[in-house]
Length: 87
Ligand SMILES: [Zn+2]
Image (cartoon, rainbow, N blue to C red):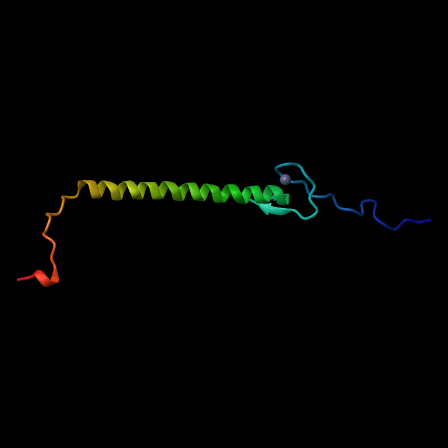
């Protein structure tokens, strides 16, 4: 009985580049085939890095603003003005 099917009818399942799992639906993260869990972790780390950069930028800006405020001359105090007491 002739067998006309190729010897390798099934394809090799992809392997996650991080954990070695064989996901049915691999995703790509950073150009690599990843399972959904490792892709999620990759996205979390990317966002965590961006948040850390934003935090550093905010701290630098706050320090700059605070230094400006500390070096600024104090304004002279002026007496309170009341609308009914003028004149
Ligand atoms: Zn994985």
